[in-house]
Each structure stands twice: as structure tokens, then as C-alpha cells.
Image (cartoon, rainbow, N blue to C red; front, side):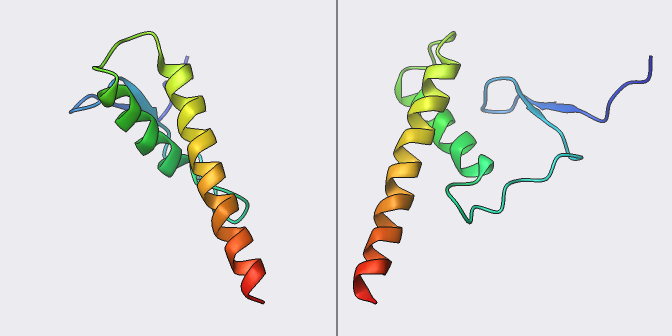
Length: 80
């Protein structure tokens, strides 16, 4: 079996798998995966680094950033 080009970042972060062959989202319709990943790690850290809450952290980060994105879009539309 051929190994995939995957690396794990462990410095100051939980085990996060990065796949260089998968492009990041453009962020035109919401936050990018990188932004969600960064916010999820901040939430994880704020929570005291408790393991086992990664999905909750990801969903909270996604929710917060989508709300922020939608508010910025609504603000731009009102100015037109």
C-alpha cells in the first residue's frame, strides 16, 4: 500500500492532519477551513485543552465564523 502525502502537526496543537493535495476553500461563501481550524484550536485552548471535544469545538468555531461572515455581508448590503 502506498503511503499518502500527509503530515501531522503537533507543535502547540492537537493532532491535526494536513493534506497538501486538498485545496483550502476560497471563503467566498463563508469562512475558510483554515479560519475554522484556527478558531477551533482557540476554543480548545480556552476550554483548557480538554480532549474529546474536537467536534464540538469545530462546530462552535464554524457557527461563530459563519455568523460573523453573515453580519459583514448584511452590513455591506445595507450600504448599497
